[in-house]
Structures are given as C-alpha cells and as structure tokens.
Image 1 (cartoon, rainbow, N blue to C red):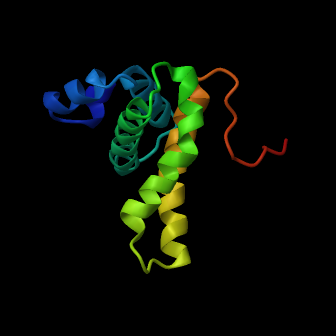
Image 2 (cartoon, one colour):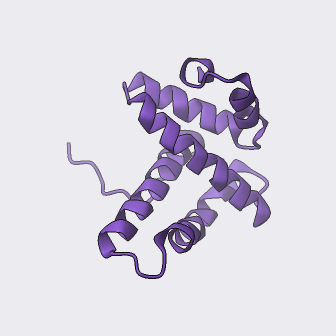
Length: 122
C-alpha cells in the first residue's frame, strides 16, 4: 500500500528497510482504510521512522520493547522542535503530532498496548 501514497520507490525502500517497517506499513494501510488524507500519512510516517531509529539506538530489539520508549521519544521531539520559548499551544501540538501516530501504530502491532488515550465511551 505504500506505493499508493508515496511516488518514489526510494521512499518505499527506506520505510521497508526500517526495522519497524512492517509496522509502519500496517499503520499506513490502517490510515488509508479510514480515509485519512494523504497529507496525514505524509506527516506521520517520518515521525514513525524517527521513532524506530530512536528506540533502536536506545536498545530496543523487538516490537514488544517499543512502548517503553514512547515517553522519552516525545520528550526528545519537544526539545528538538519546541525551541526555548515555545508557547504551550505549540508544545501541545508537537506532543500530539508525535504521540498520536506512535501510539496508534503500537496499538495495531503490540499486543495489549493501550497508550495514554482516554477510554472510549460506548
């Protein structure tokens, strides 16, 4: 399904070469099934690729180890992208733009992962 959203074979290869590539691809399929805009997919995939690199550098070697790296990854992104004088609104947007795709992907691929979302009300 990556081919439908990314024009360059180089992009497909880069995503698939990631050690969490199968999870990213599953997440892209999940987003597409829910009719998410192509721009949403374009914004979220690089976050997931960065998360895979971050977790691997911190010692993760299996998908079940990924959840323990989410908070540290979010904090790193806030430091990198927030700037010294970022407003609370900007920090909140960065936090959500980082945490939401990572946690959604983990819900799809890591058995029993719930994340920080609020429980759904039936």
